[in-house]
Length: 592
Image (cartoon, rainbow, N blue to C red; front, side, top):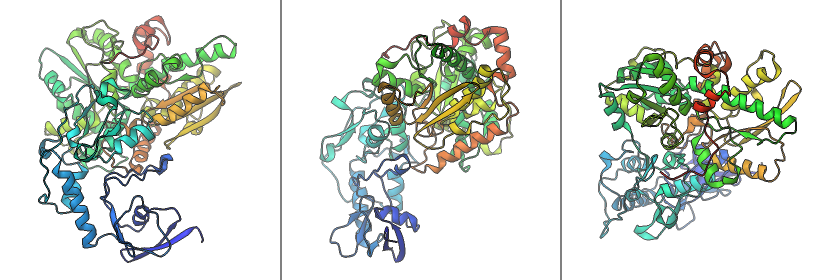
């Protein structure tokens, strides 16, 4: 086996493929080597060997200096020791140097309890800091974004956020600046994050090991609204939230807590508890109709913007507006499910319940930090009220915190259903939370609308994806071969947009794009997975299982969707539907 390398790690003999690092070899034999800067990105085709933090150093017999395990390739006959006094003392010194220039507000840090530096210091037994500097780095707190807070005083220069922003997402909002204790990850020209090309996707938050990057919390606003007797406060929860919320309460990944979540939200004090899956079904009605209309024009040779691209993901739309402003005619004009929900809540629902929309507070629980930005966009006010259709957007992590603050034990709750009329949904709505889900949901409805025939098998396996890349498929719908693509991660979005610019070689008609690798289940506001991408796949599986267990699995067969068109919207694509459920032509965003 010439392509295998023999080596020994802590007395354990093993074989690994040539080109492997010591870190990868150690993982194979169950030897844990601590890391801070390393991100395992091989599943998305990116090699990341920064070796900047020096926490993962090991002793290689025959070498004078310690070697970083994450960037040192294995060699035949290599003997590695990961736990010698020299190694341990070096790691402790590295951690102490980081802590010597780190704020001491650990107990009030948003990442407290989930801070990897804190955990590492504990595991190494760091009880005092042997080095002190004359002064600590001090930077102004950046709260310019409605989605992300940057506390550069806490930056340890692991540069994970820079790797994620530049290599995976290809956004380019973050970069390392300065040297020594002044070194920090910042923005070009030290601009506030809201004045950069940041898309608010929050993937930098997911990989930051400390509290240098966190979401902007809106929990105080929620609690204030719940305590106002003059307000009716309603909540809607996105598909991906149910697949991850349980992790914050010790439940294994891959378990959906839909019913328990609905029960918890009632105990928190919301007047009505609704499901964003309903609005996902509504989105399919509008988006599928738009696809059929565009496709018919395209097949007739009439001028039309093709391929059509989904518009549910606000971080993707932000990316399009900043990176490809000349291609803004391609996305569907349909609003995201969250915004459709808000529009219907302050019109249809308010009318049915006799509530003044000004007295209605709509809270959304999303897996996404970019939703906080989307909720504030000027065009997201379809009812002419003094506030936008969505008043407050919080993340899955914030919801977990809210439930804990209210002394509610999620694990002890009996399952409950969502309220009517904005709580009934189909299997098509729930799979919106994973990559490929919006595409599959649209095809379930589009197939029947195009062919006029009932779809027997609703599962479009060819467009299903659990990967973190790009997938092209050809779907036969009657006499039409529909060329579709599914992409997750903004780096893949860039690749697909460049292909379209180059002449659309795959002749694509319809494209789904989600900003976060793997889809919304890996959103910037989801529970931290600490680089374990199997957790993302478990969350995806939970949504697929819920879809399979649904009695109704096509959006257009949802009885509540049929009713809202009969009573209020008319038909998909109608004037009323466009007034409430679609945005005007995309324009370059104005910074908030």
